[in-house]
Amino acid sequence: MSRTVSGILNVYPEIVTKTPGLTEAQDVLDHLIGETERHSQDQRNTGAELTGLKNQARTALETSLRKICAAMAASATVSADPVFKSNRQKFLLTDSEIKRQRDMQLFGLSYSIYGNAAPYAAKLEPFATSEEVTELKEFADNFNQLIPRRQTQKSKSALSTKNLEDAVSQIDLLLYDTIDVLVKPWEFKESDFYNSYKNGRSIVNVASAKHKSVDPAPVSPPES
Image (cartoon, rainbow, N blue to C red; front, side):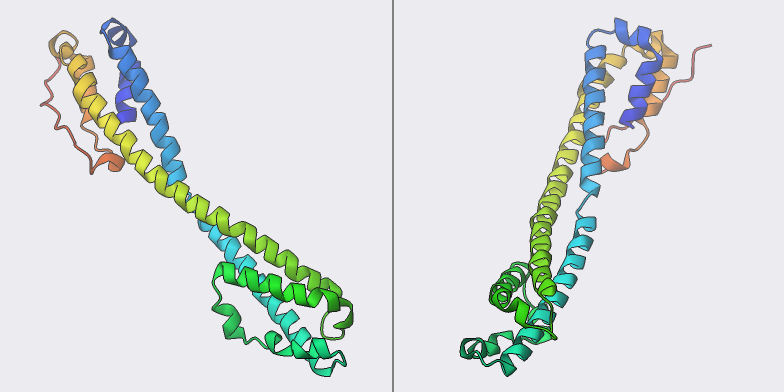
């Protein structure tokens, strides 16, 4: 509705220009319309795409962690190194134990396992290669970067929802308290302009439907 009203004012520039305060009010209206468009776009971006990327990264990290844990446990079982053998138990993680880790817990666990595996990376074959050990750290770093980005986007979306509501409320107030008042005197002198304006005001904007609405005055027929 606000975009329609601004469009109608643009069609009658002479009347807008000679109406004290109406040009300035329209400038404010256009600014607020731009704000609603920006906040609406940010509101729709809830981080769903980032959530998908994070879930993919977590799956890759879990798989890598399972591979390295299995390789370390198997190598420790047959190793002659007493220190390596003594740490065998920490690598015997079940799939369910890995899956139920919270995001940051999974990241910390992955780094811990990598720290234990790195010194033995060249000795894990045929169970795992040194490149696969390195991949564990890479998968963990990638996963860690996606966690705060997702949370940041969710917070930004929530803030945009509030900002959008504020902008819509300001538009409603501007129309009701200022522009409607400035346009009213033209009801009889410039009936085409006035009726076009009131018809534009009667359009219900879904985005502001829950805000205060102004019932338009009955539309008078154009003077003959």
